View 1: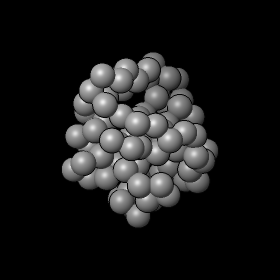
View 2 (view 1 turned 135 degrees about the vertical axis):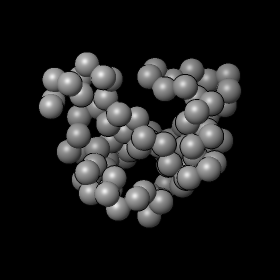
View 3 (view 1 turned 120 degrees about the vertical axis):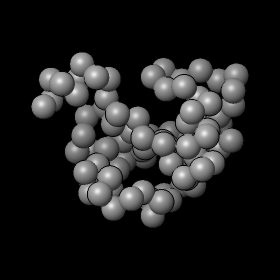
View 4 (view 1 turned 60 degrees about the vertical axis):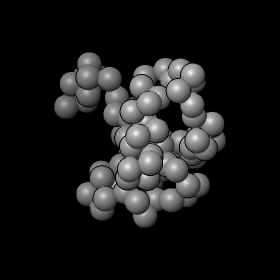
Length: 83
């Protein structure tokens, strides 16, 4: 499954995986507003055999199929420091 990854320029360590390049319209308005501007990071091919650094690849693929996007928030410790 092809995937396009963008990072939030407003929220550190926050990434959005999209099924379509620049397909930002699938993001709910409150989430898009919270993330702000998104910068392109990488285009990757996802499969069950591929490992991702912080996310479960199967969960990412399920979210991409069902809603067109997947959000990767900062690790809990980093989110608590930012609060």
